[in-house]
Image 1 (cartoon, protein in one colour):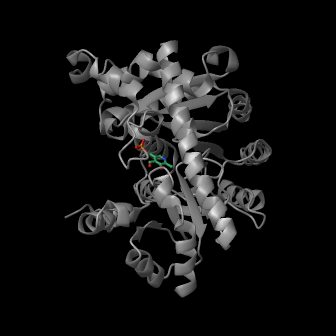
Image 2: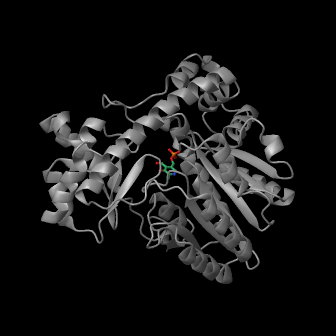
Image 3: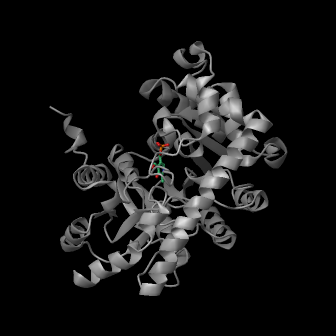
Length: 414
Ligand code: PLP
């Protein structure tokens, strides 16, 4: 009975199904015996979900009406929008973005931000440009527009961002389509943990400017994990500089997620942040995207937005939040370092990790035997098309120790 034009629709979410297997194994064998490297949420060293005290304290102290009521606007409360701009660009964002137009729309998580952007900018049946190593829901979002996907290789032979391949694909689409919509997930790329260098961003900038002579270029910059990147404020600024002063035909939409920023996944709060040198492009962004907000989810959790603005608009609370995040950033780094060092020792390849929740072992074409052996050894990972993803955000240091060697042995046996 599903509408004919939608074709076949069936969601196969590998992450949740493997996670369930891991849970069942834990129930049967005990937690200690099982490595569940599938969970994409931050867990502490006791194996529990890491909940940021600053966030929870603020939320619990909100007046009930602030939680139960509708938000004051479909596109998000003014304080929330202000907080998102501060969080991404800094307290002096007005000065930093002088000469630019910026607009924020509240969305249900980063997912809502990305899907709203794709919905409004990808032409029906057009091709969306995605990285080869990716967070797979992007593909579903393209399918909602009856669209196809093309994939840039992400890494070249030197394990750096493959600019040549990226340029070719952008140019090819620019010749075919009015709008070229590109997703880049940076920093803390899921699933690899890669972070593009400033030099790579400068080259991408040139590619986008040049392609904008043929088509509109919409860069969806998925910054879901940006607060778990260990760059200094100055380095972050240098990175953000690369999205300034772009031609009118290049629009950058940052997609932000409170799931990661406040480790509040179930709160379902995020944002689209559009940046342009053109007032009319930003007005059009606001009009079209707020239309979709109203037609799809109406408005966003008032309490979730309030929790964020109460923290960000208060310097002392923001400082406490930052301290808490720093603790977890360091913890993730320690876990990743253990894995990467042990991988080096035993000769297991790891894609170039810099920061973030995940790292990836490139394994070539999928073989069921590997999955079988991993499970036999009570190791649960997300099996990608040509690799396996390890969620260093959720596996304790104790369980990470020795994991690289076990995985290497499994590959040798398979
Ligand atoms: N982008 C990436 C790369 C992700 O990994 C996720 C979630 O795992 C999201 C966006 C969206 O998360 P949420 O909708 O919970 O904000």
